[in-house]
Image (cartoon, rainbow, N blue to C red; front, side, top):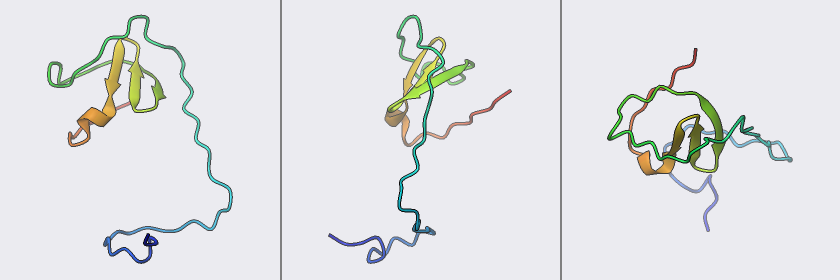
Amino acid sequence: MKTIKELDLDLDYKISNQENPTHIRYPIQSYPSKIQSLAPEKHPVIEDVLTGIKGQYLLFSSGVINIRAYGGYESILSAE
């Protein structure tokens, strides 16, 4: 197995000297009352409140999006 320095990825990266990993918490304010899958193909504009992140799912008040399924899509997120 190659180390990251041995790979020629042409990427701008920095290796952290930090010994302990950084823990990032994504608190969930609430779960949707009814689990409904939101599909950007059917509804290109989704205006809703992001209530949490669970694994690969973005949880909104009206449903969820499996964000991994849309890896090649371009999206815009705005906050008010």
